[in-house]
Length: 116
Image (cartoon, rainbow, N blue to C red; front, side, top):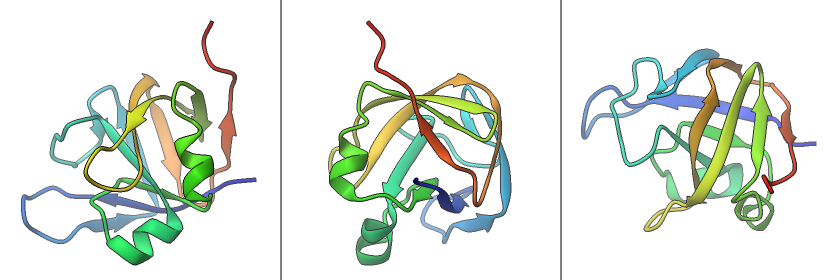
């Protein structure tokens, strides 16, 4: 079972991220985060340790398993995310916010079936 191991926001360009225990996730992304290519960027913990991408949610899941979630809906805390694609030139995946809500470190990542 995958869980959120870190939550990070990047309010200012070219500045280090701020680690949070809980964050509200609106359709635009995590509160206080500057807007990027996608509202939410998720990364596997192994890639965060190795590459330090500017991801918002670090999850304790393998990279291949995370990439396999493209097209699926995730429930994390009381937030629902639609994983839309690979993050491109950095590790992880991008997600749109299907249902706004709170996400906390330790929340389980529940995977739904892909939409038909």
